[in-house]
Image (cartoon, rainbow, N blue to C red):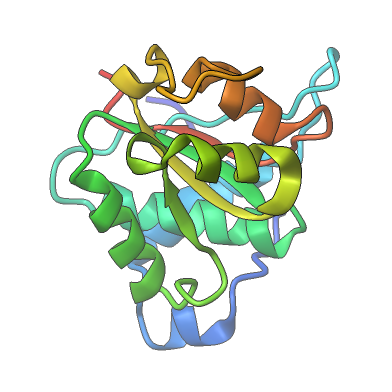
Length: 173
């Protein structure tokens, strides 16, 4: 048993998310702890991470959506959400929409993006949103060729040197 860390972080999420109970108290607690960690800069200059180890049925997708939206409101407008299945992209969109972020935070689906569209995104024409990919897509290659042929290289190029957003590894077990 370990005592919880002291909470000093103030959420930027809109009040209606809390007042309308779009997130449970348990989900909000995880978002606060994750966001508090994201404020920590490590000695190598990277942001600290956070592991959510909640069991089935807690609503990790909604918690992840809350973490992404909180980071978005803090100015970190890009996020990467990696999961096991293409179908979970629709759950990600639903969760973002359900908490009121759907009209602000667009989700792009890496595996379904044609080469020209992903190239458009990586050439910084898409400056904000969530790039959703499966683990298997990370090792895939685009059919269009070009400078950033591998999906991973495309993602890294889209992130840019100044990337400061969330990288979510969903279902990473």
